[in-house]
Image 1: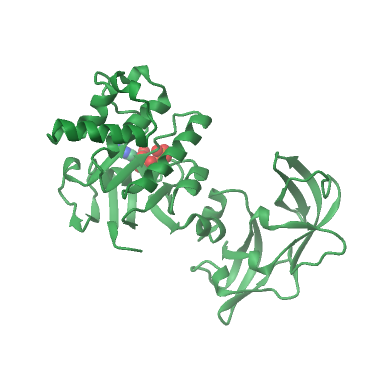
Image 2 (image 1 turned 180 degrees about the vertical axis):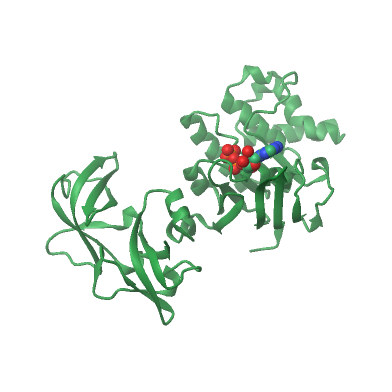
Length: 361
Ligand SMILES: Nc1ncnc2c1ncn2[C@@H]1O[C@H](COP(=O)(O)OP(=O)(O)OP(=O)(O)O)[C@@H](O)[C@H]1O
């Protein structure tokens, strides 16, 4: 990682007796887009507020741009925050709302006008909106104005607390594209709290998965999806198959004994196991899109035998559910005019050994 702009070490937060954040450590690189995800109540907003200076941590250290943030109020930090609930000034026009941070900083009027125009273009807002009041805009437009106001002073760090959660699916999609465009065009680091995992996958350079006040894993969307640190992360993002297996370290890699999976060489390499894996019972993960239905002549390195219990046509893909020795295996196949199997058909499912990933049970 290039030099971190945010460096949080061992951050703790107590609300009375309640331990909301337990030793949270993370770094954010300059210009990076980091998504914070996790179940409701795991501490995402608390962490964001601590970064912004709206809450003081109960312990740990936070530096932003190399400066210790202890005692630095929100207004003195190189951060801006966009909230889930709109925080536009209702009695100010769109132009006045966007200009607000620059007006407070007493920037010259022509510089303010130029900056507002630039933000208007960047957020694809019409010039005619400048003299409207927030209640004269749609929810999506209001959130665009909120983003424009947060970005107008070009803050080094933008903190986003579920800014799209109140929008309908279509508006959300267009604002997500807008946000990605914005991030690409400014050098700002984004820290974005979201419940929407698809959104996190689409927008973020790295995803930080939290649970009960702790960071479980930080990694690229690809690593979080295909190399989860544990079953919680695997199950949190997308459908998956977790097959019980006995795992034994062998050289650099791992030998596995998995009754559901037939293979001539039950062995996976060191990059196919979570770092915290140890000898004993564990889980072998196969994502549904990595499995295929084998025709009688087909061979595969790993085979699972079962019977189709259900299938759902989902437009561009088909999802199959296959009963295999009491377990249900899920697989996603690309859409096709001729379905390879129907309910009740016996099937052999295949994948490569490199499609397996082992983690603790
Ligand atoms: N001011 C407060 N006083 C007391 N408890 C609080 C306060 N703010 C948050 N909490 C508690 O701390 C925990 C973490 O809250 P936080 O809002 O950070 O979670 P979250 O992950 O953002 O949740 P959500 O996804 O539901 O927004 C929750 O159990 C919450 O009830």
